[in-house]
Image (cartoon, rainbow, N blue to C red; front, side, top):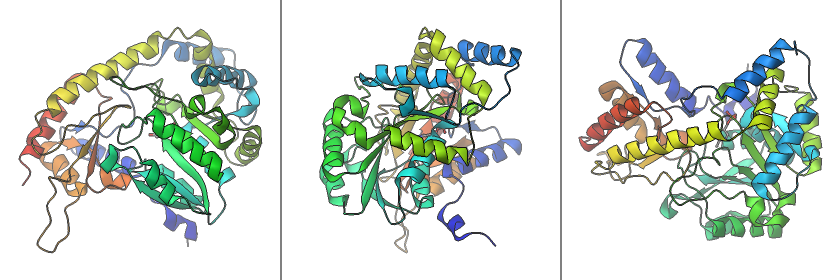
Length: 395
Ligand code: PLP
């Protein structure tokens, strides 16, 4: 007999898509996997050296629950540089990836019955964690506005119970990069109506074209007392498996997070902490610059192939490393009036064209399709070419 809470969540839709791709590959099919929420890349040299040095020194003990003091100092310097404001180590908590940072925020900020505004399509874990914390997600539609919420729509969603809004820019899955005006308006609303901004900038290093990523507190300093910044090295250093993330927040939030984390996971892996610390101390920016140019070139290759789509608009892909397709023109209504969903496209795409993608249903959007371009260029080109041929022939 399971707890009632288990009815609030199921395994993440992106993980399920990855598993389906792997099952097809294990069965001997030649699959191009465009489901990954991570970047294909070699290990950053400073991270590798930092880990080896820590192992050679025989480091094996617990650290402070919310991270090594030196790492929190280095992160305070990083956040200060990112935001243009001074941050102290006691405003930083190191976590096992951004996911734990978000979970800590949900568990320390939300009461049962609270409402949390989440722009939709959304990364699937946002509403799951809100519900685990006993609060209720309130979705705000964004597709009709280039995947950035309209401030009027956010205002209309605010109630007495609104406790937080989740802002993820650049956004997973849509790639939208929020503009200054929207971020300033959200900040003013949060301050005036007294709610939190959970600001997830995990993809902040990857913005394309003429877009710029704006940490929200750098635009409106007063919003800092209402903001929890969430970040990680999972995407920016292609370190998904190492599980180092962090949050930056007012001290009382960090104290509560520390108490919570002391009863859940304790400190993130000590070797991974030393590895990231070595990177932050020795960083010359070369590894990240290479990663950014690898993704910029993959994006160009991908957009070139997707330009041949006939009934699906070519995505803007402003940030992150995803192409997010809007299939609404393609999906038909059946005789019973039920619309097809992207699930059907995804299933047929995998079985007929050998291309794995993530259906928008995982993101609360039955007509979306997410394609990752963090994979080797030849594979990307082959996979997208098959996808274009498949979608152009969709009846
Ligand atoms: N936030 C967003 C928007 C993500 O897309 C992801 C991972 O896909 C995470 C957080 C979690 O990152 P981590 O692997 O550091 O837990």
